[in-house]
Image 1 (cartoon, helix red, strand yellow):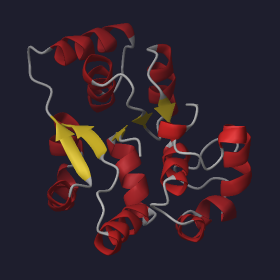
Image 2 (cartoon, rainbow, N blue to C red; image 1 turned 120 degrees about the horizontal axis):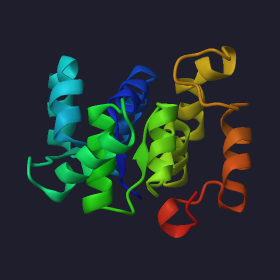
Image 3 (cartoon, rainbow, N blue to C red; image 1 turned 180 degrees about the horizontal axis):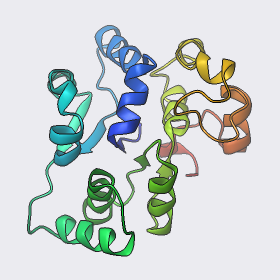
Image 4 (cartoon, rainbow, N blue to C red; image 1 turned 90 degrees about the vertical axis):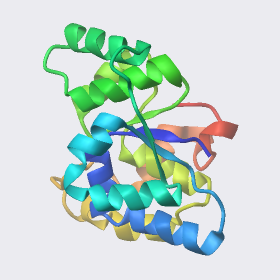
Length: 193
């Protein structure tokens, strides 16, 4: 299972749709270590501050790992450079991408923000939307297809649903189009997107 660096909007998305509850349920019943969700300190402590209690629970359970970006670290310098190159970039997203570039280049960046994903791609960071993250969970059998369908039903029912990926035609058809022969193969054992 590939850990993923996830921004605040993507956390809110998977929490709102019940996907985090699915992960917590899997952790409780399977007794195995879940794939880590990673976020940086700024995202965890500032952007997710309204749900600080949940963040602390996820961190304690091993569901979420928080990576601090120290003020004079290479990641902090990279964040400043990113914000110079991409004016108006959100600080949390810049910090996440900078941490990946400086500390963990193979870690995918997960966001619901189309601009942040485009910037990540320009910076040569693997960029996923929430549906790509769901694919990784499906492929690793952390979330069932039935649970994913139930959690993301609003994306099927409403073309203007919040956080709905562009070109979404349903979970299976969209993922089959994106992943081709690697559909339902975890990133660690398949080709990256």
